[in-house]
Image (cartoon, rainbow, N blue to C red):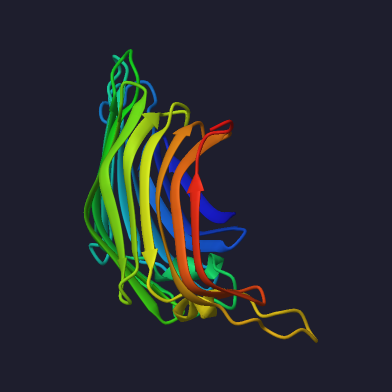
Length: 274
């Protein structure tokens, strides 16, 4: 961190700020009044400019925070793709919300394996969260639309919702569809600490060969084994994330993988002892 700072009583101004940590870097400026005795409305304005994540540019950010007995803050991206606000009354608790409007997911490609190319994506969603003076966290995520493209494939989801309340999470249904007809459907819920799960999962991949680009290259001197075939499944997941209990059916036809081939494969998963 590097910056120039100047203060006059409760007034403070920060210029020429530079912040770098790991893969993230940005310039920033700030100005406002500190919550010192006699200051009626302490507040700080922050401006983040020229942010980069692993060499990918991020939109500029403007933020404002009121530092009185009741804390409040708001943030907005320069391209309108992100806006957020939060408040924490002096009496306790908090509430917050964030809105994503065609939020650009492309900068996160820096965290993908190098062989997964062509990553792009947009997210339109709203997240709300609150907690009273006492009691558990309540939060809701509503996804209007999201798409992700990578390695020549494109995936979309619309109208998904998930919530946390009373120490439990619920998801009425999430459907992710691929441009090749692939489908992943997840619905159910469980305890917020990932115990007492009750999830239903359905998936279908019409042709595995279309996902070969997601596999890493073989070690030097080794031949890349082809993959192919149709796979699908209907699963129920109970238990906990640490010790899941998975039941259901897995199906495959014309399967080619790991140097082997199967015309048909049907697997039934059931609890131990059944």
